[in-house]
Image 1 (cartoon, rainbow, N blue to C red):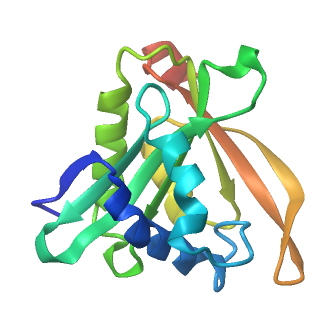
Image 2 (cartoon, rainbow, N blue to C red; image 1 turned 135 degrees about the horizontal axis):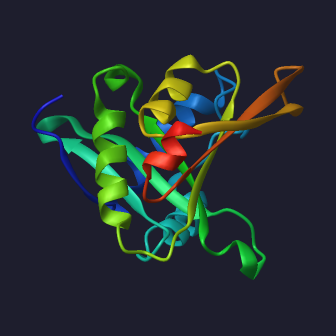
Length: 176
């Protein structure tokens, strides 16, 4: 998709970000949230991911369509030794999926993180989710393992595939 403007999210984006996230809450296993949110319930999340540094929240907007997707990096674990690892997440408005927005958002995210004190970027992807798996592989993420039956939703247990990549890809990492 051309003419996509990508930049840091602002608080006025929160209703649309919440709308995008909520699309995946009720009808899909993509997120393990089980109840939709109201924007005011997501203000803490917004602040955690939009204060700059290694924790980012970028949005992709297009003219009259507004925000069509977002990408984040957030804390992986709370212990200080994990501070150089971030967890990435990405979501697109349903009608905008499959149009290259995710690719553009990840490109912008990794460019914006260049120079940050980040060693690893990880992603946990509820399975099955071939589109997300492929997007992450396109950006150099490698499969490192699957936690089986760790999320229960719709009366079923779902697996989560964990993938990782260094912030800066090296030819050695890509060969392994």
